[in-house]
Image 1 (cartoon, rainbow over the protein chains, first blue to last red):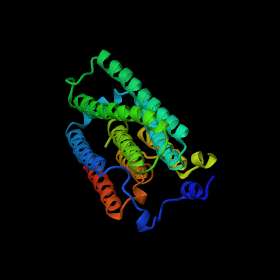
Image 2 (cartoon, rainbow over the protein chains, first blue to last red):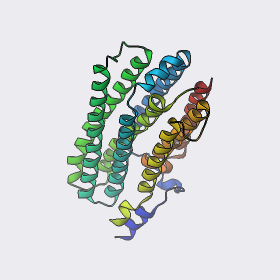
Image 3 (cartoon, each protein chain N blue to C red):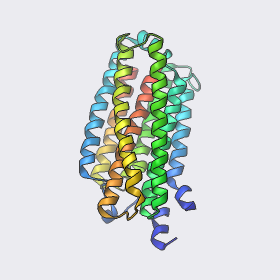
Image 4 (cartoon, each protein chain N blue to C red):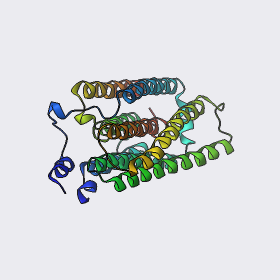
Amino acid sequence: MSEEAAAISSAAPSVAPSETRHVPGEGGIWVLIGGDLVLFSVLFIVFLTMRAEQLPLFEQGRAQLNQGWGLVNTLLMLSSSWFVATAIRAARLQLAGVVARCFGAALACGAGFVVVKFFEYGEKISAGLTLTTNDFFMLYFIYTGIHLIHVTIGMGVLTFLVSYSRSGGFTGDKMRNLESGASFWHLVDLLWIVLFALLYLLGGA
Amino acid sequence: MKSLWLSRTTLIWTLLVAATLISWELGHGVGFDDARAAGAAILVVTFIKVRFVVLDFMEIRTAPRWMRALLEAWIVLCASILIGLFLS
């Protein structure tokens, strides 16, 4: 391993000198991420406000969710994010094959997430629980639906990155494009982490 | 190649999985008798996870200081509002 590569891989990046600080990816992607964080913050607040007003109904709704699916999907999201973060590190080491495989593994986790959601929705709908059942299930379907749209877009990005990264040469614009895609996928992971807690885990109160 | 996988990134992933399992247990009545305390603990653990994703996976730890400050402020604000609403 070259000296530079060793320096990169061992960097515990807690204190970076100001000249090495950089925005991961395009500025534009961060405008999108910021907008999404604000939008979802509002959705989270709306959920807990409505929950406080109809606590027994929300408790009953939560009890009707399959928490095991929620847990599996959280582990899939965390793992896909880990593969993406590792892909970025491998790109800095110019390991094109590893980068493509890591993005591929992340994509597979994303596909697993969609399959689980598909079964979960099927389970709910066949039990007669739909968008119009009550406020809990209305929010459940809308929130997880909006998130699923993000997952689908992210999977499109990851599919592109798998082929884009095969040719290597991770510098300048190409590296920035990889970072933009990675940042978006981490956003998808982050939003699910909060949704999992709000929809599946919070009890009582 | 070994250092690619034996990395801080992998350590963070391990912590995130561990935190998920802890919040799962908290959500199933382990640790707290009081559901309010358990719920608040779940939200705290959730936003600790969010912070690790932001700082280490999104690499905001090495981003310009204003960007890190902005995102950290969002994490604290969002967590505080949600915990406040949950307990209200």
